[in-house]
Amino acid sequence: MTIYGGIEAGGTKFVCAVGTGPHNILAETRFPTTTPQETIGRAIAFFKGQEPLTAIGVASFGPVDPNPVSPTFGYITSTPKPGWADTDLVGPLKAVLGVPVGFDTDVNGAALGEHIWGAAQGLDTFIYLTIGTGVGGGVMAGGKLLHGVMHPEMGHIFLPHDRDKDPFEGICPFHKDCLEGLAAGPALEARWGARAETLPLDHPAWELEAAYIAYALANFTLTLAPQRIILGGGVMEQKQLFPLVRAKMRDLLNGYFQVSEILEGIDNFIVPPGLGGRAGVLGAIALAKCQ
Ligand code: ADP
Ligand code: ZN
Image 1 (cartoon, protein in one colour):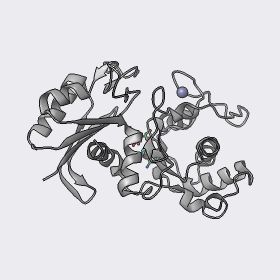
Image 2 (cartoon, helix red, strand yellow; image 1 turned 90 degrees about the vertical axis):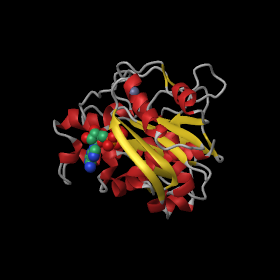
Image 3 (cartoon, helix red, strand yellow; image 1 turned 90 degrees about the horizontal axis):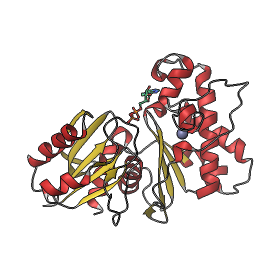
Image 4 (cartoon, helix red, strand yellow; image 1 turned 180 degrees about the vertical axis):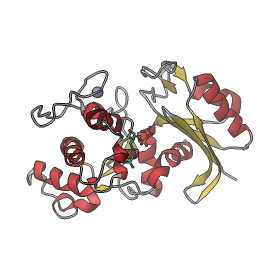
């Protein structure tokens, strides 16, 4: 029997699961992300009790090295997260468990999971964007997860920032007011002095947030011509954002993209994940499956 392991390696928690897909998860565990040694050790101990496994997939926070021919393949590379820069994730798993290990960014993994089981079934060019603690994007282009010199880092693009309307300077440690610096969950908390999940529905935060997301999606659409954009992550639990983002993106494009998907079908163009909050760990299982 073919059974896969998946690790959603996040900056605050690791989620590990064993199974074959959304309707067949046989075991699951989660624990906080502490030191690399302890955290990877806990993942290995979990899978040790679940053998035999056919393959494991790791969908990780980044930046990572997803290039299979690179000497640092399977590493978390230059992360600012203390203790985690230059951490080999894949090596210890392979060495101890002796199975093939698929590896990619958390968002590329989520994109693959959505492609197989979720909101991107039947599509070959689409984007999965998460807006949570950070902003990150995974891309499938022409049926393949997109990698170039590294992987897309769509959270750090630059947007028009009208400082009269929004004097908040942004919190990205690298760029201050990039998309992540203006629109990730911690940016909302810093701008408004309260966690995003506590802001009321009629708070001005949402109109501003939707505008930044819409600018980003317009830029991504003009660049990649995706067939769909999936928006996940904690901040997108605010479902009122979806109609605001759709309307604003259509205004920004101003009729330039003459395709029915955007002109008439925008409700199906910008959508939540089909796999909901499980897109991450199922994405990791998808990476194992595609080994
Ligand atoms: P992570 O990105 O760490 O995997 P999440 O996607 O849950 O985790 O993102 C966490 C961020 O999203 C926090 O900044 C939090 O304030 C925000 N967030 C979580 N849930 C909600 C919600 N229901 N509404 C608005 N913001 C939320
Ligand atoms: Zn940035």
